[in-house]
Structures are given as C-alpha cells and as structure tokens.
Image 1 (cartoon, rainbow, N blue to C red):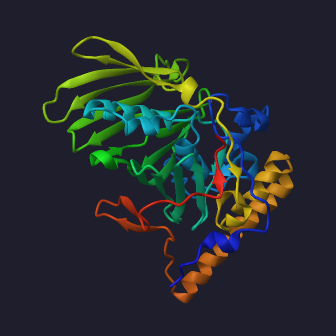
Image 2 (cartoon, one colour):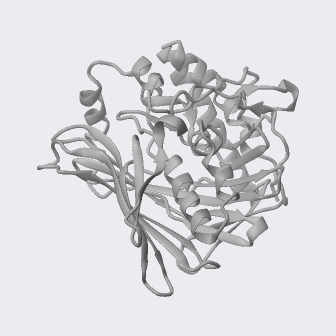
Image 3 (cartoon, rainbow, N blue to C red):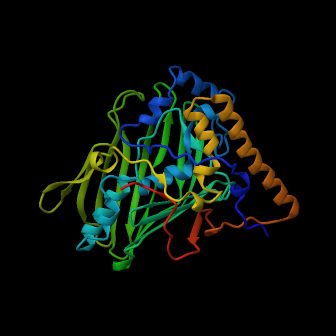
Length: 389
C-alpha cells in the first residue's frame, strides 16, 4: 500500500517559485500574453471533437500560468485585502452571518485570464500557506478524475473550511465550459452553523469573440438557520455573444422554511454588489472588490526547511521560473519531467498492485458519483509559506 506522495518523488531540487495572485489588475497575464493569442488558442483545439472531456488535456507550457491549480484554489481563501471570512463569525444574528458568508463566497471569485491555465496538479501535490491566524492546506487527492481537497482553520477556533472540487472541462466547438463539481463548506464553530456553497462554472468563449467568464447559479444553504441564497453569474445585454457585461451577479437570500425573500442581490463581482432589504427597501453594499481583491500580496517562504517536497511551489518551481524568464524550451522540458515522473510512478504502483492513499484527507464517492473529502487532522498547522501582513 503506497502512502508517500507522488509529487515528493517528482519534485526536483529546485527553489520554490511563488507568483502574484490573480487580482483586479491581472498584471501577471499582461506580462505573458502574446499578440496572436487567439490564433494560438484555436490551434490547440483543431483536432479535439466537440463534447470531449478535457480533464487530462495537456497544455504546452506557453499556455500555462506559472502556478498550479491548487495555488489558484488556495489564493481565493488566503489572498485577500479586506477579510470577509472573519466577518462571517462576527455576525450578531443568523441573517447577518449568512449575508457575510454570501459576501465571502463572492470574494473567492477572481478574474480569469483568456488563453492561460494553471498546471494540472500531480497526484499527492500539496499547497500549505498561512495568512495571519488562518492556515490553509490543499492536496491533490485524485488524478483520474482530478480531485482537489482543501482544509483551513483559524487559530481563534471560530472558522473552518472544508471542500472537495472536481473540475470537468468540456469542449463544445466554439467554447470550453468547466463545470466545477463539489461543495465548499464554511463552518462557524461558535454558532454550530455549516454553510454549503456551490461553485460557479468557468466559460471560455473562442468565437465569435474570445472571452472567459464565470457563469451559472451558485446556491448557498445553511440548514441550521433555514436560510438559502441563489446567486446567478451571467453576461448582461449580450447579442450573439458580443458585448454585454460578463461580470454581473444577481440573486436573493430567502428562508427555505417560509419561502419569504429577505433581500435581493445585484451588482458586479469585480466592482460592488449590493443588497436591498425586502421589508425596508434599504440598499447597502454587500461586497466591494476594490477592497477585497485589488493589490493582493504575493506569498513568501518563511521557513525553507519546512517546505514539503510535494509543495506546489517546489514541484513546479523550475517550470514557473522558466516561464517567467520566457525560456520556453526549458519550461517545456521541465514540465515534461514533472508529468513523466508522475506517470512512471503511477505505472509502477499499478504493476505492484499498490493503492495510493492521500496524506491529509480521506476520500469517498457517493452513489451519485460526487466526491467527498474529510480532513484527517482537526486543525491545520502554521505553514512555511505566509502571506505578508
């Protein structure tokens, strides 16, 4: 029975590379984006059939952001300006806490970048970062299908996050849509409340005009309070896929017990989102992207010796370094080494009849095919990587 991390063996002796998180400015994309990007993207799908599952589609390094998908998931939690997560545990009543959770959910939405994607994490890859008193740990718990797990706890003992995500990207001829399966759970321990949150889908339009946007309906449910929310991500006033604003959100918070609407939600996730109280008509700002996801700080290594060989920034360090230097041949070779090592270890495990077991989570699948992850430890320890205060 194989319990060591696949990525521990795959990691080269290279320095960890951490890059700027995606924020409103999106400076990282501007540095990498070539002039003929659309033509290059279209060439990728020349031999791909509509309806194909792209979960294991291998991108050339020239199309990669210099970071892993695990890092992108984590950044949505630990890279913040205004801390909406801690506000959730400070609410004086159930409605105030639920509204804060809705705001936090919107804060995890970051501007996607057309033509670029993060690395597909290798099996057993981990990402461990602390931001203040919040400690976040992610692990790639499955490769086929790709499943990522997250556990985060705060030293105050007020908040815990657990989620398990399985993105399923499919090619539809003129677009690619990534449906993100799995639930995010926010637990407010002091109030014995648990909030179950869906993820929006990612829609990449190739024609008639290239774009990338979040879409679909996010549902948030708290069974203890009987409150629910539905938030729709959509493109407004579009005609034949042209024009319109792709960053609109609209929805409502309501009681699942009575069906009564408490407030309406309206705005843009990259600007402000407001609520309108159904009883008083009062409008107030629920979320402000300028304070939440602008000018975000890049994590740094605090304890080099404490880094795990499976850490994303180590596993992909040489690839990211080469991409940042625009040394495309070196990035291609380094990426191939990481992926070939992971494939070789997978073959060896299969030949020996060994079963790989996640290091930090237990993984199960229900009768509907949904994946669920349970942390093996009650709390996440402080990390060797931190977000500067």
